[in-house]
Image (cartoon, rainbow, N blue to C red; front, side):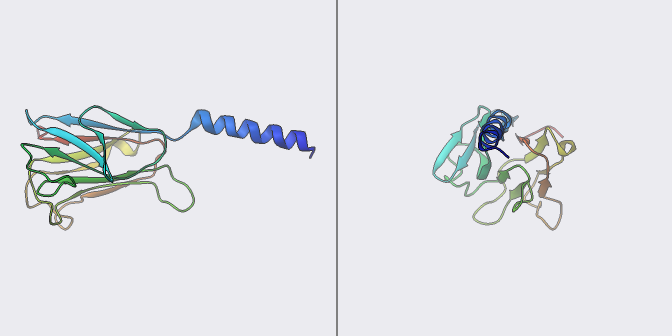
Length: 157
């Protein structure tokens, strides 16, 4: 193949990737009447309530509802949602989200999540201190690209 055709093909491929790039949105639904939903990655607060959209993989983030300074920065003393939203590719299996009450986390408010734009709105909810991985499915895998996630607090049942 002629070198200029190869270069042209590579430029076209790069443009297609730039236009089609990976994106994920996290949406909060707070029915508690108080509190601030937090989305945290490492030492960075990504959102304190508004939707957050990543323009690439959203890896190893946590979320919880901060009520009256009850929760530590990493969600200590509160019901925690952990998620990685990533498109399926060689070397990864897709997006995984779970609810954790593993100490130092503990039940604080009814907390749930569900996937948007794929996996049929699958998700999980924790409504009491008795919800554990052994009593109900709290981890949900989804293998859909450009997946979004809704996180709920005090949702009506």
